[in-house]
Length: 150
Image 1: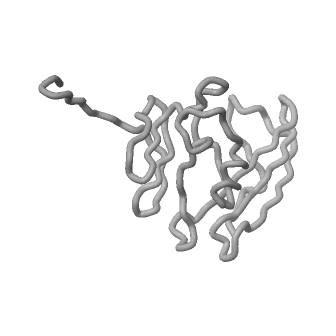
Image 2 (image 1 turned 180 degrees about the vertical axis):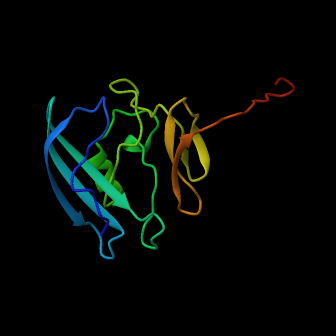
């Protein structure tokens, strides 16, 4: 199981943490996925933080992107519903999205090696072909050709 810190103490502008409690558990056999929940009393009121730690290189782990209703534009879907629909053991809302309008992601989305949404100026979570994970800004350069017009 992953070792989580007993308390969280993020720097400002995060509110000062006055008290905290922690619960952890291994989610799958082999400890490749662990879950932690922090209950915090802060200067601005109570806060609950959920953390999922994943060994992305473990042989029984697969990371992937899911769209609400499997469509770029949809009526939306909760993360827990998407996880249940796809058989995932954990789900994380990993991008801002167009809430209440199209519900489409607002940053880069690549699924099965195909670019489905161009990057914005925000950092994104990238799952590389070798299973490694990194946060970075995406870059995009392209052109469109229609007949002889560019």
